[in-house]
Length: 203
Image (cartoon, rainbow, N blue to C red):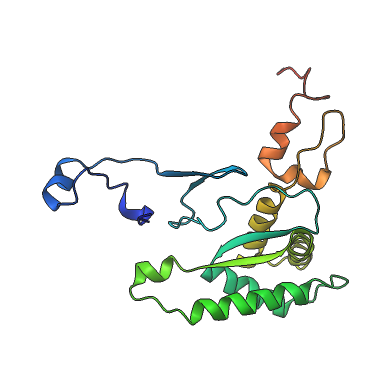
C-alpha cells in the first residue's frame, strides 16, 4: 500500500514520470475504503494525515471492550501534558490512560523519521477499554470548561469523545437517546425521524 501526502493537491497519474504527471493532474477528494470479514471502513484525510491503523475498528457492545484510538503524535503529547496538569477528581482511569500515553509516545520517539513530511505522519495508537477513555476524556472536557480554559486539549478531548461515541451501538427504535450525545450532529440527525421532530414544519 502506498501512502501519499494529502496536501499534495490530489496528484494523480497513470505513469510515475514527471512528464505524464504534468499532463494528468487533477484536483480529487481522496477517500480510502477497506474491508475485512468483520466490517468496512472509510477514511479521508485528517489534518493532512490518514489514520489507517484504526480504520477497521468495529463498534463495541460493552464499555469494557478494548478499542484502538489513533492520534497524531502532536495531539497525544498535548493530551498527555494537559492530563498531568489537570486534577480529575473521582476519575480513577486517569492513571491508566496516562500510562498508555506515556508508553506509546516513548515508542514513537524511539523510531525517528527523517524529513518534515515523514514526521508529520507519526501517529500514536492507544489500546484501552472504551469506558476508560470515555471517562477520562469526558472528565477532561468538563473540567476545562469549568475552568474556562479554551486550550488545544479541549478540542482534542472533544474530538476523541466524538469518535468514542461513534463506536457505541445505536439505540433501538423507541428508546430515548442519551442527551449527552446530542452535541454530535450525526447523533442529532438520527433523532429527526422520531417525535417531536417528525411532525415539525418550518413556519
